[in-house]
Length: 167
Image (cartoon, rainbow, N blue to C red; front, side, top):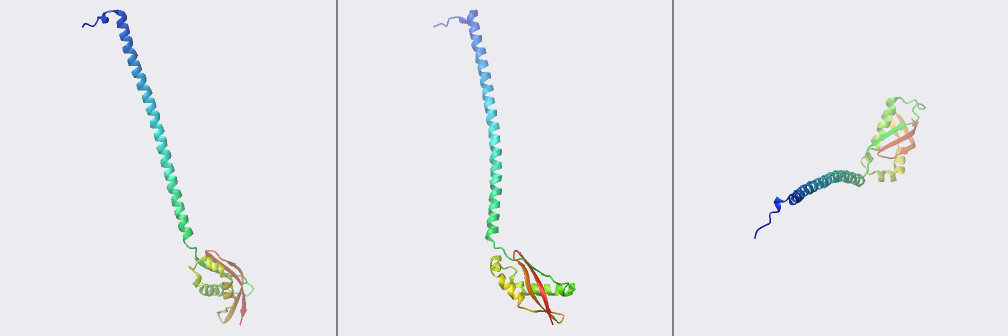
């Protein structure tokens, strides 16, 4: 069997050249569309990876904050320090040494509440006031008693009192 010699006719040669050029153009357009699609997919993938990493970072920081808050809420709030102030130093003509000694004695009297749970101390605020008002503190042969004017209970207990001198 013999294939007819179509390659010698000009019309068939144009047809085959057209098929070849069309095939090459189709292949080039296929490569272009595939490349463009692949480039868009890579960009989209990169954007999603960035978004995922940002969300993971945000999630980790929120979880850490949540853990810290849980630890803080689980940890009991306790009394850290006590400060005591005498309101009427000038009326009693107290010098700074006597006032400092009185403040030191009151802090020594209340030192057992440092480190205690704040809720327990807040419930017993009347006991703290009664303990200070019913006790006389002696400094340089003078007895001082106090009446509490202000009692602030927080991590740092602040007590303000008026002193009464008795001999």
